[in-house]
Length: 200
Image (tube, rainbow, N blue to C red; front, top):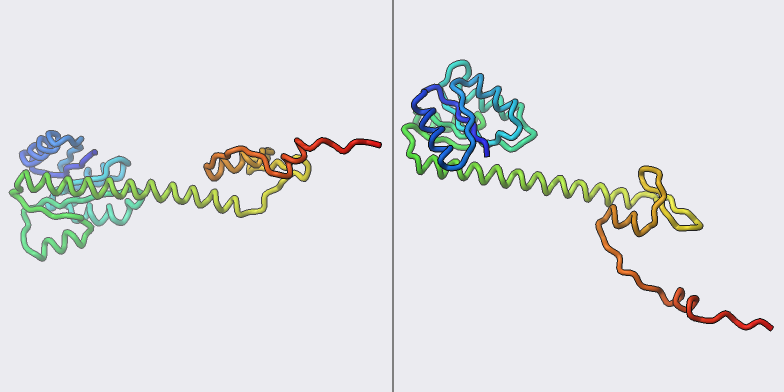
C-alpha cells in the first residue's frame, strides 16, 4: 500500500519515511501542502496519507478539505500529524475531513497501530466497492433476463444483445452463470423409444 507523507520538517519526514518503509509500505514524500494535494489528485492508487498541519503553501487542514470535496472515486484515509494538542484542534482537524489525529512527538508503536487501522479500513472499503460492483453487474444481468427475449418459433434459439442467435442453454449459462445437467423428459423419451404404429 502506498502512503503519502506530507511534512515540511526534513528530520521528521526522514524518520517517517524510514519507519513506514520498514513496516512494508511504499512512501511518497512531500514537503508542502500544495505538492501533497497534487500527489493525492494525480496518484489513483494512493489511499493513505499522513499530513502535517502546518506546512508551506497549503496546510494539512486545507488538504483534507479539498480531498473530501474532490476525491470521491476511491477510498482515502487521512491521518493528521501535528504539534497542536487540545480538544478544539482535534475537533477542527477531524471536522476538516481527517480520519485520525496524532500529536508530535509521536510514539512509533502508536503511529504504526494507527496506520495499520487505516490500511485495514481502506482494504475493507476496496473489498466493499468490489462486491458492490459485482452485485450491480449481476443485477444488470437479471434485469436483462426479465425483459422480453426474441425466440425463434422453429429452432427455439434466442437473440442476444449483439443480435446473434444462440441456444437458450448457452444464453442462460452466459448471463446467470449456471451449468446444465442433461436428461430427457418422459414425452421425448416415449417419442424416441416407442416404435411407430404399424401400417395396414
